[in-house]
Length: 370
Image 1 (tube, helix red, strand yellow):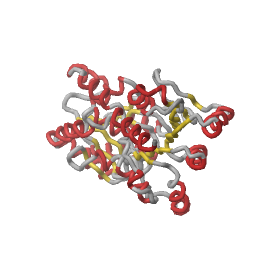
Image 2: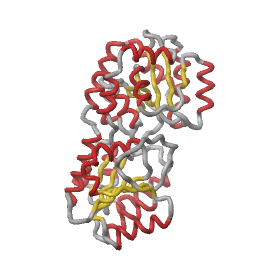
Image 3: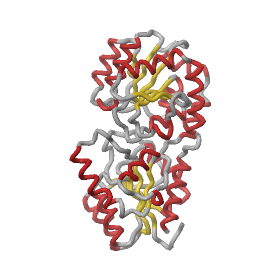
Image 4: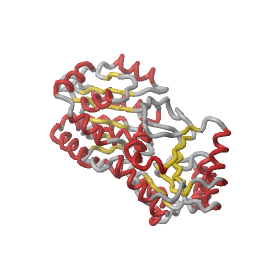
């Protein structure tokens, strides 16, 4: 893949644990052949980032952006650009301008079609995207729905390579496999769950469109002392979640958790729940399945087609429907054998969705462009 002194430039929106883990685990063997740039930091939330050996830069100043553009288009330092999406003006500019400087571009995306998009946006996208999407050499969608999004806007299937968007499933699996039964039971007891209880877990931002209110309402419908709900995260609905936990002792708010402690929480829970109104992908589903948990997700979660098979790896429900969510939770609570089988199926299914495989898919796309 090495062609003289020219490198590959990888452009991402913000440094997140998922992206940095991907770079560290998947690209460390070619780190001298790539430069990594982020356009901003802590954009969607304040991330708790550990230290990484792979280097990267964040464009904090305008002069850094000008210097980057100089290196790309005038100094001709890069033989290929790899860009994460087209959500920013700079990424759109890079996609278009690179064609005129004969620099191939690969674009990754986690975007599926969203039926709730306003009509005026749909019209603009339908007019603009078929033009924009002619410029990249190849696309790397996260999964099936994301590939469908590209096809909807006219991208030929020969220009699509599935990236298999994921997290460090190998690390999570190995970590939870080494948690003892006594450690698991201790974690459950510390967070208000007895051995016979069924613990449902939500991990993510506490935002309205994440279905937090429906999740709390579902717990009011279930009304079973053996059903517990652990909520992990932070966000604008924090006060509502804390109030719900005070009102309903079967709901436990665990604050925001990261690192290995989070894998202990996943392991100690029984079923993972993601009731979002719409979710581009949902990497927490990857995490939960890697920890060997069945999942309950809404049909609008972006990874559903790749991961969640009804009654095999989990349950799929309509969004904004507390009754359907409560019914799914009751099914998991009342059918232990089926739930355990879903857990096993989930763990097996996610096993090949590794960071190493995702990186190999990306590198294969690069090699196809050269």
